[in-house]
Length: 64
Image 1 (cartoon, one colour):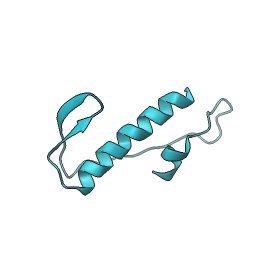
Image 2 (cartoon, helix red, strand yellow):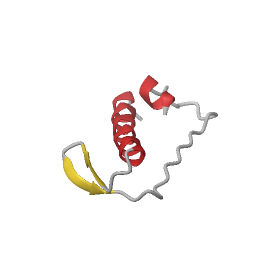
Image 3 (tube, rainbow, N blue to C red):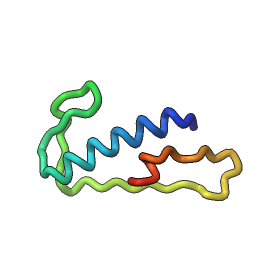
Image 4 (tube, rainbow, N blue to C red):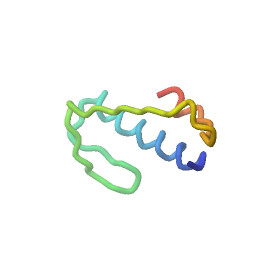
């Protein structure tokens, strides 16, 4: 996967996490307005560390 794709995913995750922390019912995600979110939302990320073609993660995704 391209590093730019990971950077976009990280920025979207940050928006979702900020909405959850702020206990919002809706939030803006990139150009979409009023995306609904519930407080029971869960985000799980996994990576196969043994995969030879694995791309390094950008710093903003590592911090999440």
